[in-house]
Length: 192
Image (cartoon, rainbow, N blue to C red; front, side, top):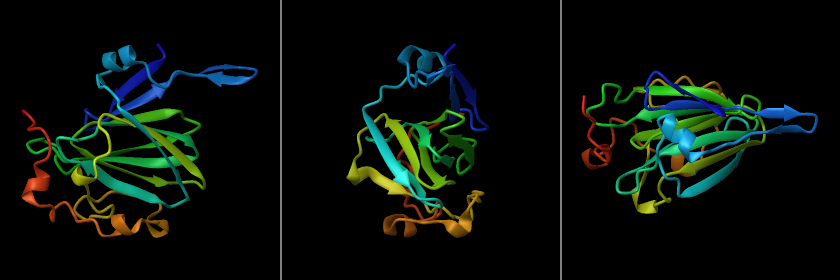
């Protein structure tokens, strides 16, 4: 099998390990195969790819988009290492407001599936980090939202909190408690 799928503590968030085929020249690996991902619980159509470059300490997020443009994200680190985080924002979910994380790197070749209904962010743990991710909805400025990376109610254990570099927009994001009721109900109702 070219992929291994491991649900995390919030089982809708899935760690994906791609199998590499090494030889004297380096290695080859598939990064996405629709049929395999559907078998692993990720049956989505991706419509946009994004790429970012970050300095050590940079925090990007915690971002999400509201319906009708809610995004699922398949995240991979192509150079360096990141601490990747997903926060459950689904009303009615038993894990609402909880988070999971994984370290993704060029060396471990892991990817993280962050479904619709979750805020996503990462911190660059090394210099010159390159992150690529596929999304299930196109970027929509009118539905873009975010939550503070250091919201004390979330208690995310960022590895380099004193080195955090933020965009001006991310530095003023609200906490989860400050979100308006309309924004907080952007996701599908979860049947418990």
